[in-house]
Image 1 (cartoon, rainbow, N blue to C red):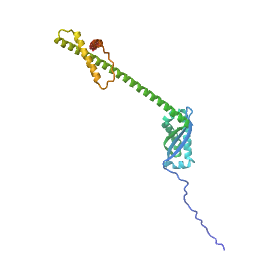
Image 2: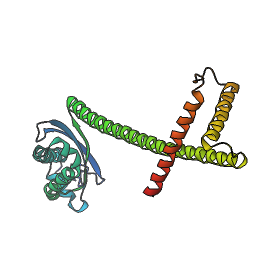
Image 3: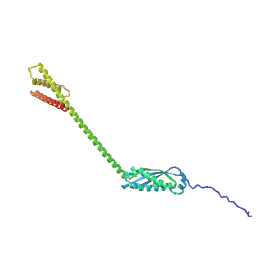
Image 4: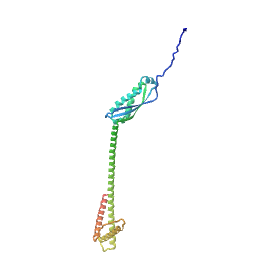
Length: 266
């Protein structure tokens, strides 16, 4: 038996999640190899920090199939068009400019897809190992050359100062000797004058010879009694005293002349 009537079928109604999209800040690390203006290959590592714009999440999800691959392609394009225009040494000093160029290009390209580029950082610039070794050798040679120049300047200064000190010492020693001889002459003069006041029958030369003879024997006595004396050769004979007297008299005359010259110089 068949029953005739209306049949109602309830179709279920609802929603299905098409996918998930993170709104947190994300980072993409890109490694790009290129060559510089002076034909040196370098590996540049760049970190791109980006986020999805909340108000433009629809475009961020449906317009791009692979946003990380798109960002990587733009980074490669900027790096390989910027670094070949500068030398290797300038790559290290202009890495902020490289990062800013990448950020500007990515910002313009990705904003229409609902992505905002927050920051780009050049985290590493690595040339080939043999190039790094050559750069280190150049730097070491430069520093060794600077160190050699500094050592030479220090030795030169030391020699100059030593020569100045030696000249000053000799100058002072000469002044001391001149004053010593002048003092000896003054002492002998006083001795002769005092002796002539008491003994009028002798002349000045005889008194001077007598004083010199006394000093001569006093000197021999002091040399002989010193514990640090080993061997001393002195002229000893009938004419020794007169020779000593002539030498002292000549020294006194030179001392007096030197003193007069110094006084005129002042």
